[in-house]
Length: 324
Image 1: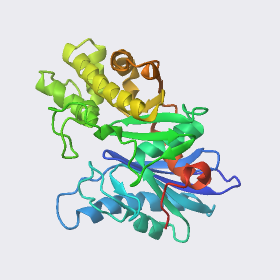
Image 2: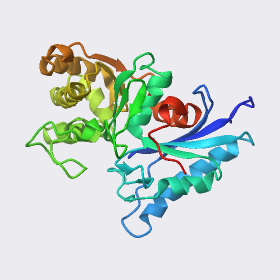
Image 3: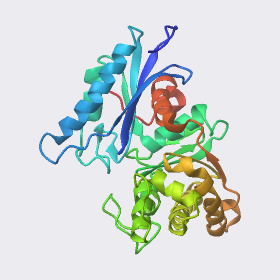
């Protein structure tokens, strides 16, 4: 339950392919109460979108009740992409039930009469880390979220750079292997197709790794720490793809600060050494050398805190997001 202290709250929402989270966040970025659910996986059909929304709505109603009458001044939302800022709809690659889903309008029904603001999960992670995390003091910054997918967000000149549709910085769908594997987005050779947790596991299974636990990226990390050569190769392969995407983004945007979060980044001891080596190998031009890597400081709360900043700190984070 949140503390009974003064000041308004933001209802922050973070939607991903594996989990959905929500929290009550204060104006200084403190998460007072939070809840998480596994992202629903309904069978395909006409009711699938509504089933996913029902799970999220129930969690949001629990949190609004937990506010205990303390004012909620807005709903900030971080979502996996792609999405349509102008139409305020979402079509996350890893939530197949939602295609053109009118998320902002649904959220407005839960907390009527307050702004509902939307940004991509990578953008919100970037905002969160810039506002209260590892990116403080760095106004030209790339933040990557390496998890079920690979999200990305850019801070340029102290402000989020989201582009025409709101999807700028989506490094996970930069093509780094022209003859590469299929990606969940429908393309081939994307960073996500090589570097995400599920992609790493698929590669390792194909190469002969046999899980001793739950068969997730966490299990793969345990095997790599134990010296399993295929598991180690999966992390090196992921690092190579991430490095290619990072260097390409740096060449385009002239940045040298990168923060990496997400579930796979919890294995920074396995990912960062080959990633730094690959960055040095790919970034041969002078302005691409010396890219600084930092692990995210906010952990799984980065998206929530970034989403809350859309409400609590609209300047400089508000201009690129829609409202209802």
